[in-house]
Length: 266
Image (cartoon, rainbow, N blue to C red; front, side, top):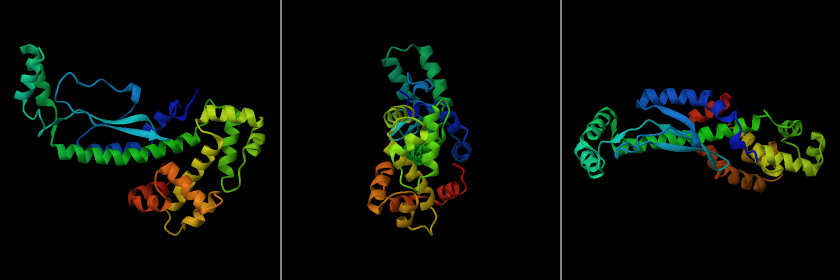
């Protein structure tokens, strides 16, 4: 069964987005660390046969499921158990490594950047914050994906997007798509990974997020503008998707995130 996380164009679009490319460039200039975006099953092998490398990996999630990871190049901790090579050498010898293997490990140890634990944790926090933005962008890209979809699903997506502010029922959208409601339910879930109701609610929440960053927008007005029939329904749906209320979302947005969304750079 297809799932939005398996859409073949999603990761390439994400990796080539302005959001990822600009953050990666700024991150590498500021920290000296290289950042990669990888599918979970495509991660590169790391030198995990050695005891000292630390590879920071932060998942990127869509709909609560990880489909990719932000991965930093390996470092070693300057204040950890293996802060000195003596401890590394003893560990390798205890594991049965010979002198040549220890010398090779020493060369890797000396070449590998060393960071204190608090700095590595600061990097983790930065990447975790970015992964949230990237997951948000991934879902927005997913909503726009139409490649390899049946015409009925593509027509349904377009109709939903164009009529978000209006009441939407499954029978109406199925009729617009040219298929029976029963067949529509099967193919829509198969190609989007979501039921019709889940998709509509998430699309409305995505639209609401764009409106909420405008300071003059009132939460109640946003709720009705994107098609929710009550403020309580809006709050429940928003929290179900974002794990926070609309007000909490608005207050948590940084000025840079607001500028990106207002500029349409997602």
